[in-house]
Image 1: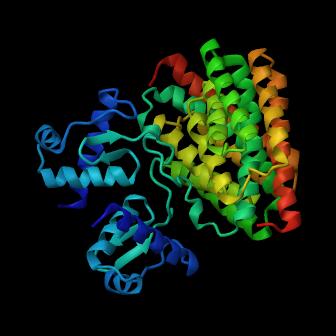
Image 2: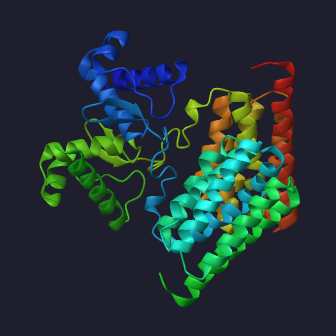
Image 3: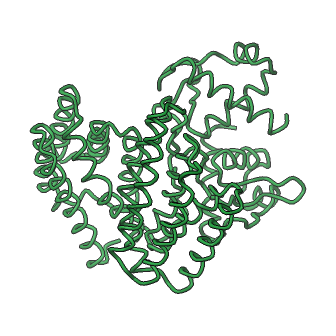
Length: 227
Length: 227
């Protein structure tokens, strides 16, 4: 099979997904149906599906079929950060980008969030608090909370971008330091309160303060050479 | 071959690349050598390499071997934006992120660029001007110019992130409008001048103005319903 044909079929499958308004978690037609529909061999379809699995667009669940990935099309390491050796410098640079994006995003969220958005945000905020107070791992829900703020902003790119950056930071260094937990709860609550109150500047400042605590934490790791 | 084994071997090949400080464009050991080194079958190595090719980490050049991709590990569509249907809204949201990141990055570049960096930046600025004046496509070099500013900032993440965002915009809409060309040349020159003069605020403002022209251009497309 020429590489070109495989790529073409991958592109055709992506087009099918878009045209049919498929959502993450949806099942796509099986190998036989796709081969017929696209007028290519089953082995070509299989090859194209494999490539889309590698690109995190599709996932094969043995025995039940081929599905669209939850994080459709976003690879585990979309920015190719795995090849950067200095993980502490990387964490600081990632945080610097959070400083550039997230306060502004919190402002936009205070303007654009619907009542339904805010309810979801409140639930996630409660969930993070609960996990922290129980002493259980809260990082995934924490990232989910920041992603939800990005969704509230209605900037469709940041909802993809912010989880990538925040997850990358948590892969570089341990952000779940005990000292930071009280500040995390408080600043998360503040951000929520300001978004609820449509307080554009307040949301900006609350997010900024949240990031300041994070930076202090990273700096303390540097000072104590803990990495 | 179990999926798990393939993934493990992919991870081992990535580790080899990192440990050996390999750079984009470097050739990696062939299938036989890798199979021996990692103590797995050649078909397993082949499968792992295929997965890394799909992830844009490796590329196979027929007849000469397997090489590390130039944009090592960054997929064509790392943010999974292909699935967003409203391309004009997407372009506006991407530009909104540029507003959040790039003026600050230009400031950092004015502080952190080395003399060598500035020379490279100047060459790219000349090259964009030249292409524009000749009426040739300048978008790739334009993106390269903005990537170089990000490199000057010494924030290692933005050099990966900014080309992704800027390239995504150029895929959504045609940014090479004739009206914008004069402003592109002038504002690019201003940004360069401020970085050279270590003018932190000037670099911020020049980049901001550059983005304002871009936003005006997108808005005019909306008004004229040109998309």
